[in-house]
Length: 178
Image (cartoon, rainbow, N blue to C red; front, side, top):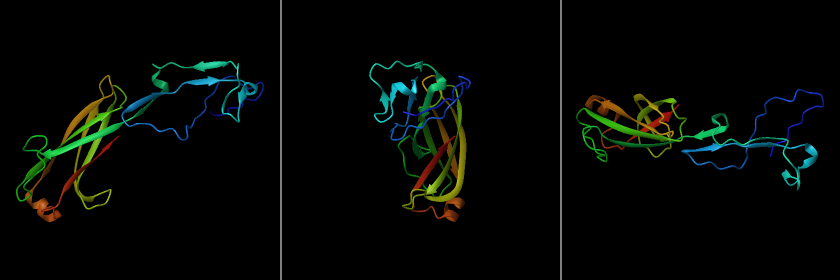
């Protein structure tokens, strides 16, 4: 619960930013925030809840109000040999090749278009991977349920693969959704 003090005689409107410490959210879900406003004397600050029998003086609890909805996007990817089928994880880096990466997102704002940027990196044991500079961009427009997908296609020449030292190393596609 958050405390808001309004001085006597002040306008009876305004805004307040609220923080919800300790709340764990799940990626790919959406959450709706409801508010109730109580008189200070009707609220037990120690217990963090209204006193028994207290009545809210104002309430906003509309589960369909987009202005009260918080979206938590979830992104999954599946990179594969662009000349093969989904699931084909092997490429011959001694020849020109493509890697396709199917990017699937959920928990998006319906109808909104998002930019997806990706980079092929060398898996080196770090969380970030080793940059190759091979990038690609695309877009995802969320459907009515907040889901969407796109495929990024990375084209790599045999010369690039040799220059970057890709031979014999695992390549990972990293994506960012904005």
